[in-house]
Length: 379
Image 1: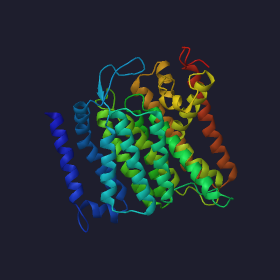
Image 2: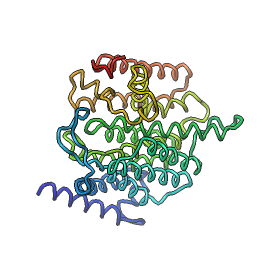
Image 3: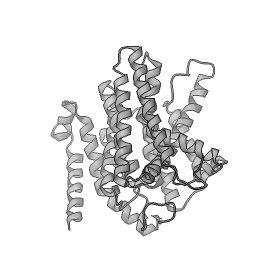
Image 4: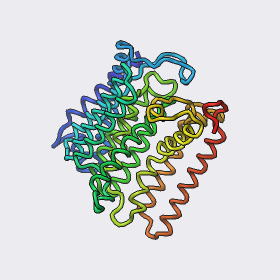
């Protein structure tokens, strides 16, 4: 009865938010008061409150279940298409915002491709080659709509170089978030934190479209945590984790992080997304060195328990403590990215970057201490 009442309340909140159109109501108030991001956050969160139980029911109905196993943390079957709720919640808020540029259209089309790819992979299973092909297609769609790295454009073949680097960036972030989705609540929590950091930096620098998109993603991820926190009743699946990673990767390309300081411009998105980026680089190097991965296909398919969250649990942290610790680390890095933008001196900028590198060194120490003593994980 309590769950039904909670779902009814969420549905009522969603309907109220959707029908309160300008020139009156809460929607107009948030717009005039400079709080539009709050409105979009609430719409996305309420939509996911409603849709997450539905996606769980659908997962059971069509057999899209994540079964327990030696490489899994959970001990009973769990629906794994929760990404459908996150995707639809995000798109609901985006549609309600009614602000579309060429780049935003590209982001939404590319995100839809990534979501559908992940959904069919969660449902039927797809080969690594198929997943990589469509991830590249989605990234190319984004670049076709004008969203790409800007710094090499003045070089010979600058547009081609920018396109290639942008595709590599997006595919990398997509898989980094997919790899992090290994314990309850981690990928969705990181989605909330990273999106809110982009929102804050964007709002502080008057990049309002960036903030609105970030708010929609943060709200969708926050709404999903209601059913994804440990013990999870539904998983994001590839449809959710890759979609979150893709939108965050697009936000990194969409934002203008600095106009006259390349170090700040380059480091800001890297610090905000620092933990997922570090995790994928470290585990990739480790797996190549110990022979666990010998090809791109094996890299995409490998599911060893050697990620940062697994190694923290090896050190004795439980699921909630592990998620909390990783989130706190990412907040520290994100606040560093925020502070760098307001540091007047070059020395101050480099000192903050050294501080961030020190945090990563601490993570390396924890990774080494928590490594699994098995042949596949030794290095």
